[in-house]
Every structure is written in C-alpha cells, then in structure tokens.
Image (cartoon, rainbow, N blue to C red; front, side, top):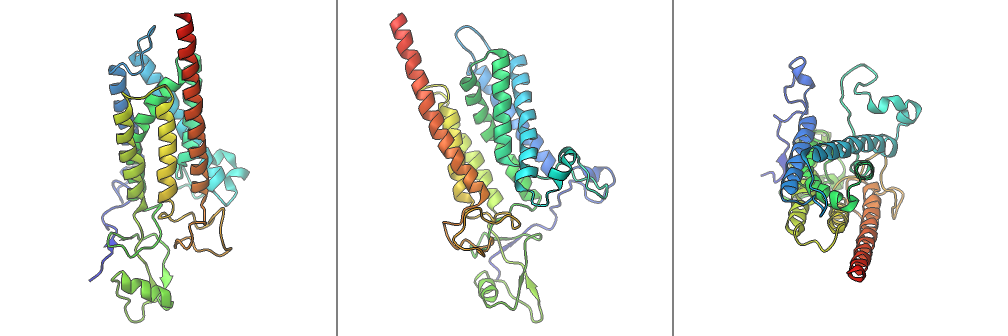
Length: 330
C-alpha cells in the first residue's frame, strides 16, 4: 500500500482553469490578497489597542492606511527585484530589466509576476516603513514592531499559495506524509537507489516504467505553519510584554531566520543554483547528504539572525539610555 500522498489532481494554479479571462485568476495572487488582508486586520486591531500611540499622539486610520500601503508597495518591489536578480540564472532580467515588472512571457502569455523573494520583500518592506516613519515623524521601532506581528499573521497564506502552485516543494522523503508533486523532478526507475527508495515509500514501479516521481516533503506547509502561524502566536503573546521598542522586530527577524534555516534542510534548493556552500561539487539538491551543504536561503537567514541579534542589543541600549536620561531629567 503506497505511503505517499498524491498531490490533489483538482488543484491547478488557475482558480478557473480553461475559462477565458477568468483563467487569468490564480490562487497565488488570491493568497497574496488574503495575506495582506489578514495583516491589515491584525494591524488595525493593534491600533485599536493603542499599540501605535505615543504620549503626545494617537494613531489614526489615515496613518494606518498610508503606513501599510507604503510598506506593502516597497515589499512587492523588493521581493520582485530580489527574485529576478538573485535567483534567476538566465541573465535575462539583467539584459532586459524592464521585464522585471512585465507580467507576460516572450510569447505574450500572461504569467503574472511569477517569482517573489521573501528576503527581498523583507528588505524592501523595511525600507518602505523607515521612509514612512521618517516622513511622518513617527517612532520607527514602535511601528515596525506592530508590522512584524501583522506580517507573521499573513505569511501563512503566502506559503499556501506556493503549495497551491505546486512549487517550492521539499526534498524526497519516505515519511508517510510525503507528497508526490507532479512538477517535481523524476528519476530513472533503473537506478538501484531509486528502486530502494520507492520500495520504502510504498511506491510500486511497474514493469517497463522508465521514470518514477518520488514523494517530497511538503515544505511549503512546514513554512506556513512555523514561519507564519507559530511565529505569529509567539509575537502576539509577547506584544503586551515587550521590554522596549524594537524587541518584537528583533524576535521576528531572529525567529524567522531560525525557522527558515532549519526548514531549508527539508526544502529543495533551486536546481539551477544548487548550494552556495557545499562539501562536494556534485551534492544533489533533492537529498540532504550533509548539514554543511548550505543554500542561498540559509545564508540569507543567517544574516537575518545576526541582524536580529544586533537589533536586539542596539534597541536595548537605546532604551536604557532613554530611561537614564529621563531619570536624570526627573
């Protein structure tokens, strides 16, 4: 009896496949709308709790709308640019940079803005929020603390969008929840290790079968749960107990970096990029042969963890200095 789960055949990237015009609507885009809607709902709740207020100013709905819109706009720009320039190996976007935000392929088919980088969105969104806070003269760390709670709440939907697209799946596995993704790399059925792996996974290789699609970790769901739901729960519980502004931003940055770094060992890196750091030159991306094989995402997550620690220490020192100054003034 097969242990692996077949990716549901009724799931397509398009919400209404085969229907003119409506076929342009995709689950991935809809999940982005859900993500942003959820994030906005959380931020509005925080605003009503007085989370964005200062002793001399009460945050307004206009503040919330403009702050959120600015952050999301910069996030999308950063996510797209980072994806096309860091993860694309064809070089086409460097040769034709106008295609970065062009939602059609060279044949004229609508593709949407396929390809978004979380780390690019993180950098872009951060820049956007800082710019807004400086222009509006609002406390930067206080407002960003609220945004990271909101982002974590909405992030779950982004990874569910990847799952519905059947992309960013994990490495091969014999775990009973392993899933066979139709777009995953197939392997020659004549290779001994493939036969052994298929047997462990309960997959029967038929006589004369040339290729076999092995089950994968549904890493998109791992990320949706840990980097989204779990991280949001941690931040939500800490929101009324933070010792200083910037604390939640640091916890989010460190927490996301940690969760993503670990999950990257289950998620298959981009085949055309492979590992940035590797113990051997031919280490397969579909297997975790060594913890020392480090992907692009893991390097960026390590930088996030380091940055989060620096932010935590810096924010604590700034808060300590402010309290000392206030005590002297009193």
